[in-house]
Length: 90
Image 1 (cartoon, rainbow, N blue to C red):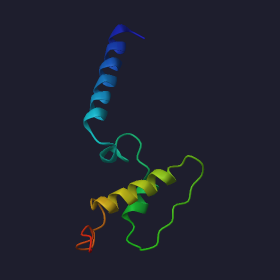
Image 2 (image 1 turned 135 degrees about the vertical axis):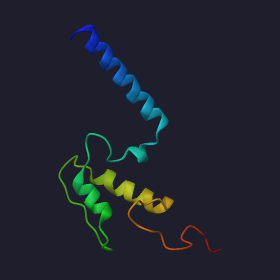
Image 3 (image 1 turned 45 degrees about the vertical axis):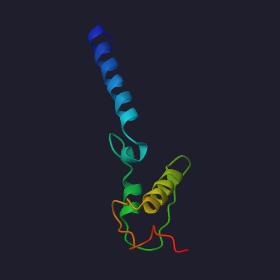
Image 4 (image 1 turned 180 degrees about the vertical axis):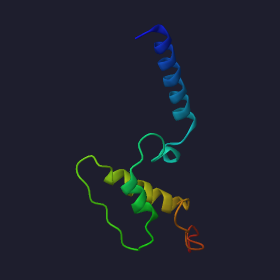
C-alpha cells in the first residue's frame, strides 16, 4: 500500500472516530453503508402486532431494543405517541 493510500485511510478512520464520538449511537442506527431493509420494514409497519424472525446474529435484538427506546423516548420516526404518554398519573 502506498504512503498516499495509507494517509487517506488514516484520515478516513480518524474522521469516523470523531463522528462516532460526536454522535449518539441511536442516531447512527441503520444509516451508512449497511442498512437492514427488513428491520426498517418492521419499524415502518403500521400494524399493532409485529414479529421479528431471523437467524443467528441477524439483528433481532438490536431491532427490538431500538424500537423500545424510540417508543419510550417518544422519538419514533414512523409512529406518533399517544398524547400524555410520558405523564405519570399519581
